[in-house]
Length: 389
Image (tube, rainbow, N blue to C red; front, side, top):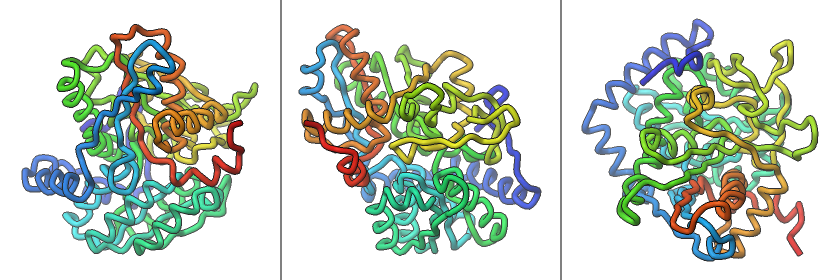
């Protein structure tokens, strides 16, 4: 459970949060060793969450493209419709172990907020979710779901009114209420122990990919892709596969693709700095001020990335690239019409990169794409931007 990934990670927080982070780290280490905790986590993930999720052969898409066979890791089938369930459940059980009665969370696409609201309802915890007002408008179905589940949704009007500002507000709340409240951070970012803890809870994705791929074709996949914002679904996908031969590719949000538009590609266009308690790659100007980001996928609309991703980029073990808004939107329609699946716009970035690469590979090679969420939340935005002819 490292605090540092090479020069990345750490814990850059106000003094008032140091005791809470130490308490969380100790509780997390003890829980990780506790067979009863792990057993309850697995039982609830199976019986309440619907795990394991299948590897689905996208036969029509693969045939249409030629080349490698494409499989989808169906995290969209988890309870709540996204991989966010995995981490929210684990941290929810930790909150109960800590004896705290209140959860707070941030959300961009709304899926982490929904997962936190579900866990709060299940475990009897008061729940408040911070969400940028821009994201609230474009993700209205998830706002309604959170409220129906009993959570209070707090609109954030500062700055770009998206994910970065939602995290800022959640951190302020935690500082003010640290003795009674657990901050259920939704991605593999932030101060230690969050990156390593979130990675472990999300690594169920990669462990299942390994187990299922060996059962289906006898070996790990040749190429594995996942979208990267803060990076929780990607690190959960990649971490168990690091010691295999699989080529690993993280796909960031490239925005419009116009010259000078960084989108939200903090690895591709950023440089090291400190944000939200961690040192990692950030989109920042020459004076270290965080730059605005923009993406059609609100879950990727973040100016930083988890520190383990920064380390994996520098080490060369994982390749990182980006896909534009238009490419992701076209992929949404393509998967809907070839496979009958509405994907979230976030994993559409990874799917679009898989579509680029599949025709260059052999028919006996296997691609796995983590389909990190379903697209119900994005239907209004996709329709607003126009249906294909």
